[in-house]
Amino acid sequence: MKLGAFSISLAVKDIEKSKEFYENLGFSILGGDIYQKWLILKNGNAIIGLI
Image (cartoon, rainbow, N blue to C red; front, top):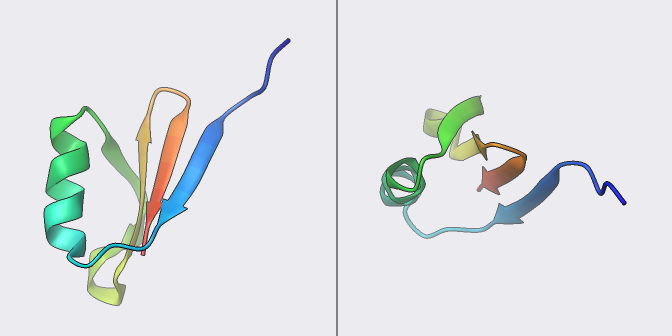
């Protein structure tokens, strides 16, 4: 059974530090605008939204 892409959105206190944390885990920026305080990061089929 294929479930497709997994995604979750997280409310974070410091988007810059959170971006760095997830990039260190292998995620890369897929979209968003850090200056507007939202990002979408991807690693394989896993997608994380940071707000």
